[in-house]
Image (cartoon, rainbow, N blue to C red; front, side, top):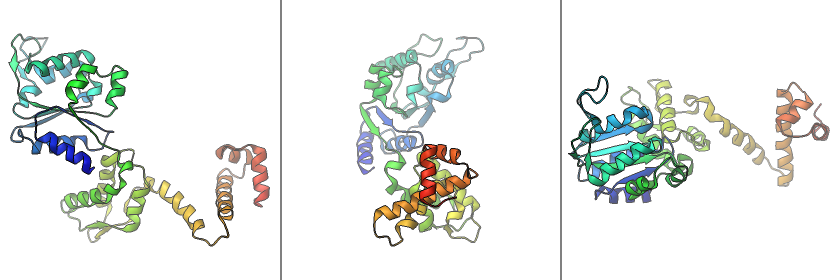
Length: 308
């Protein structure tokens, strides 16, 4: 992340278009906002739009504006390009943008002018463009979701933000930040997270990335009592304990003194089979199916471990 922050700071010093690549919830808009705040257009507006959230037939008018009478019910309207004048326009999820609109947008970026829907006048624009995609842009080009020339124009500088599961060392700083910014607002005295609760967070793979982590911390703050000062495991959502429980479950066998790994693995296998057997109402066929084994192999295992 230090490397990406370093690149982002360099990007802020010039006017080149920036493309931020990352999964949903990795903080792409935070990066875009930070680049804007450090840039030469920081005194101008920061205007953000999620291209996937606007219907295809409305996105063009949203970006470029409309002239009165352009279509039934159309009024004179300023688009986001004009709203972001002397500032930054952040286009999120550009891989969802129609290819024809990409061509029109490309022309506007190259000529530094826009034409409102239904209008003939070329309006000069001065705006910094930062875009983002939740898909590998080169793959999107191959899949014909992004025009190649459009990609080359927008990705003069690119930032590839990793998923939270690939940078779990950031979790402690992010949790501290969320606590610091939200606890006092909620009137709570929480100031940190316990070691055990933190270990639960480390075992989770965070498919929702930073947005999911913030949701978890916010929920813990809401559920904490007003006199509590630490986030404990019971404040966390139950679904987080799935992976944690499995690893804790296995570690209890590893902590036992065994002569070798083979004996330890036998203990673990026996307990897994026993749990699956009891959860299947002691039905051998169902237990075998759950564990991906044949019925004959399961019968042999049950006999070996003395499970009746």
